[in-house]
Image 1 (cartoon, rainbow, N blue to C red):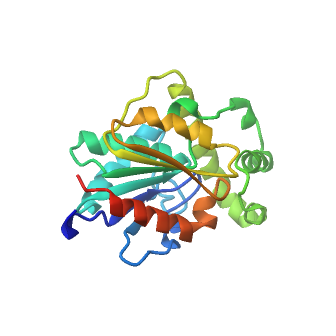
Image 2 (cartoon, one colour; image 1 turned 135 degrees about the vertical axis):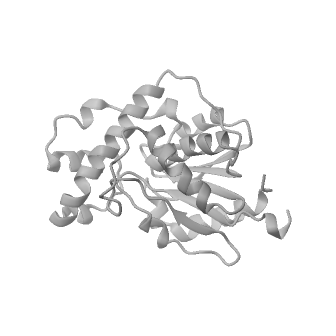
Amino acid sequence: MAATDRIDQVFCLPYAGGTSMIFTKWPRPVGGPSWRGLDYPGHLLTMRQAPATSIPQLAAGLLPRLLDQADGPYALFGVSLGALVGYELALAAEAAGRPPALLVLAACPAPCQLPWEPERFSGLDDEEFLAAFAEHYRGIDAELLADPAIRELVTPVLRKDVALYGDYAEAHRNRPPVPVAADLLVISGTEDITATAARAESWRAYSTGAVECLEVPGDHFFVDKRSAELTALLAERLGRIPAR
């Protein structure tokens, strides 16, 4: 791969309730790619924008920004909810003739294997909702959710994101996979009880390219807690892949 063909841009999609600030904290390995977070409308940094009503709509809204910023070969990285957004964004970019060279999917099973129990989050007040969310995605910072000011900001966003996830899970439960052309790198945390490595294997049906599934130490939020190891891994894998 020529130096000019290096994949040095990774566009990153955050988990539910998250923002691009997650990725500004990531270290950049020497000679490695830059991390470019994409914010969802109606989130903490984009409150004036109307939130999306579905994950495909969310991806369609992000596509112009992605294509405008991607000035060469690029990869997509999505974590948890962001993995689903990343998958839909890869499909949209492919249809537009600008596919990613690699799609990285972290802490999330494939659409046909999403764990979803509607009753878990229905009919709950804010305190009950946050408790249910923390129980479902173990590893979340309990002290963070204990802050009243943060709870007031985050809870409405989380509710909308959980609704997006639930609608997507219901829609894809019996839907045949639609594969992307990009290679997939699927990463699971060894202590993640929700997005297990066994469930992550289901992504193999969602690409016509190469699919690598691996585990890294950590829980559902290993992207925050083990960012140095993760970014080093991503840089190494990107260095192997010829740009398309």
